[in-house]
Length: 147
Image (cartoon, helix red, strand yellow):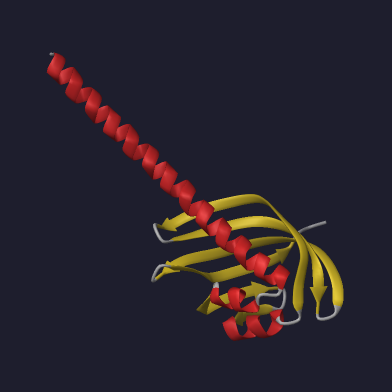
């Protein structure tokens, strides 16, 4: 009887550990993807376009009120764009695989776009994929938030 109790206790311990690890992995994945998103925004803040480019997948698609754009278009249009400040809130996360996930959040941002100051409140969704050990943004969509 004692042996069964010990075996049962061990099984419960391992199951609880495995479930806890799965939850930690999901949280960790979210944290990794949010960190990559922030790295891209920070690159736009400092003007480090090489980092921004490296964080963008070669086959990426970005969508905003102007329509869709590929990586070359995005890189061309962000040359005259600089964030001054931003705040991210209300982050939602969907794990798609162990190497990909979708985040959705709201950003309040200010900066300069092609010589003109701007401030905006925007809803953003971004799909991140880890390829060959490197995180890249595969898709991003921005929609102006209602006032």
